[in-house]
Length: 70
Image 1 (cartoon, rainbow, N blue to C red):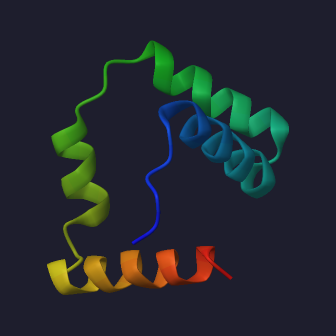
Image 2 (cartoon, rainbow, N blue to C red):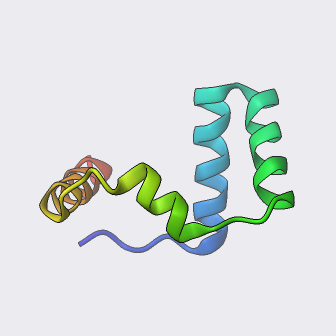
């Protein structure tokens, strides 16, 4: 099993992925938006992940971890 990222490393990698996918300006806009608005994690999780079956999520996690070691 892959080693869990520290919180600092997770923040760094997440910011990097956001910048790569959204561009620097929109990544910064997103981070500012998330940090200043109230956030209901349960509502967000249901909205974006409720269509996944548990088995699908587990398989994605396994696949992700198997590619990280490559």
